Image (cartoon, rainbow, N blue to C red):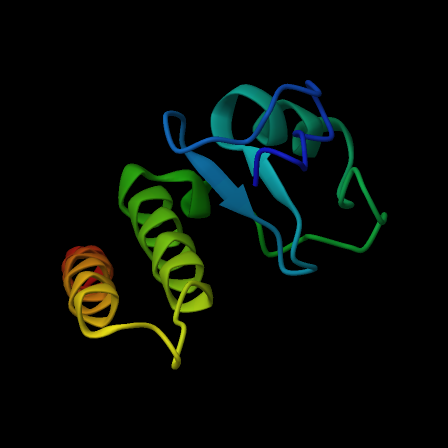
Length: 111
């Protein structure tokens, strides 16, 4: 993620700030970058795809937590190495369980 800066502020995307994933698959800092952009434009700052579904309700802390948890879960899944030794597989399983539980808790908080 650090290789892909926020297209609005050009600062690195990291886990320390809330991140928004657009329907077209681009990441942005939430309220500080994408929200002001969407007040003027109704398109993705990167590819100009319409993002009308990113209304204010999707900027609530619950939605941000859910999207962040799902992003982390996807990133953990990308680290899976079927040829890893047993210790690495145990470590992966632990990381996956933590990420999965966080995503599940965030999803439950939405309902």
